[in-house]
Image (cartoon, rainbow, N blue to C red; front, side, top):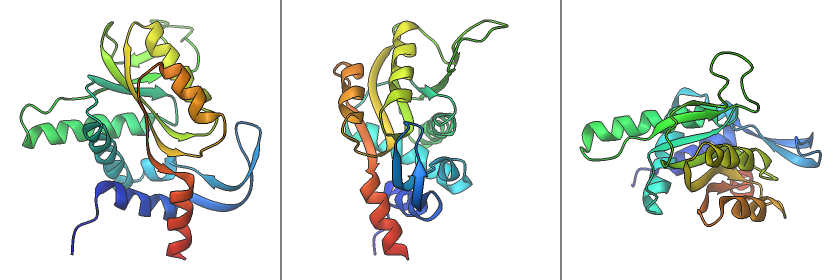
Length: 199
């Protein structure tokens, strides 16, 4: 019997803890017969570990070369921390494996202190990966892409945990990513199917 991959284990946990059927209003203004709150999984001790490793494996599979991972607060916050930590664990057992540092993008510039919009890793010319939990319209992902570029960083890839496959979401993100691949771990239908299977 083979051990399930990190992504397979993450899908099982997402379906169990983050997926709900019903009538929900979305942040995009639309309505849906299901809701996925990835934070209940990405902030879960085991879910966080699985998230970090599953995203690193997705980046390796697609040969994405980057120095850091970041995204818009707060959906991306636990993802960024988990991916950065997972990269450090992998480097302990695989010398030469690159570390991915983390950065968080504020929704607006800080009105005090440094006044920065990006917290954490920030280096002009660095190749970075933008992450998000759920992609519906892609607005929060695009916001983070634009902030990273304005700071002089190069977007090497964009990753979301769950893509809702809305008509305009992927095209909008791909246009903003300007050639950088847009990758996903799962579709909403993947999570729904696993949720129903577990009932």
